[in-house]
Length: 298
Image (cartoon, rainbow, N blue to C red; front, side):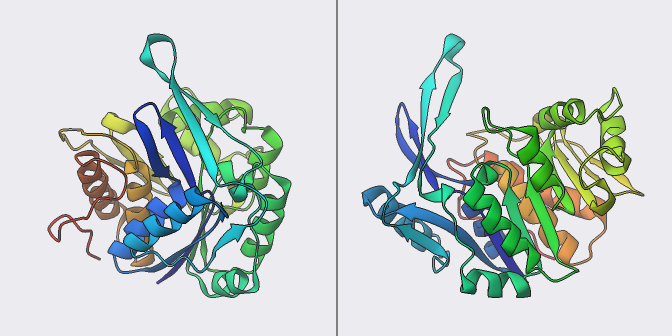
């Protein structure tokens, strides 16, 4: 299975120190642990932070040949400060290396052979990235999964940008709060979560609904949903002792994608994804080594 993830590589600058971040690398890491040939298309600066990201990826055994090094723009950072009530406040800095992704010949060639292309809404905030993403997705073969990992982070949630990425996806992954938000943005009717899922899948006013094969909705401690135009599967939560939840959603997405590629039934996919995401929650960081007994096997 060949998988390409398109998007950000950055550092979360926390009050306790910096931590390597970016959903694409987390997703690729877990796909590789489940046997896929998964790679990342990203960009870092020609600076110490960029070299540290490349070293981090190499330690995870991630292929970095499509991680470009920008000679002008710095490596991306997110400043995290504690606001009122101790809640984190994020500043995702702009004009950084991952705002200038390139659809290189190697990336386009890989995309043309890929079974899955995964991309996020945050990485589409710049015009250059939207152009590169369009070229990459246009190269995909007709049967490829085009997975949009919705990541609503203000102020990068313009309706025009979301229309752009939604119209190019055939699998949509988001959490329950994001589902409510985009339902309102695109006038999707429904009060319950299930009604909103049905609306997104079927409403003509929702961008790209005619192409959607599946919606993945994570609800944190309340479980998750996998939905197609004909089936809805709810997976109850798995009680775990949470260390942190960083990267759990990326692991969940990876497990769902691998299950779909292997043709597994939705209830089995949901259970496997919940098991992997639950284990990640018990560990520190987004990319723990997954024991054989926890690894999703298809």
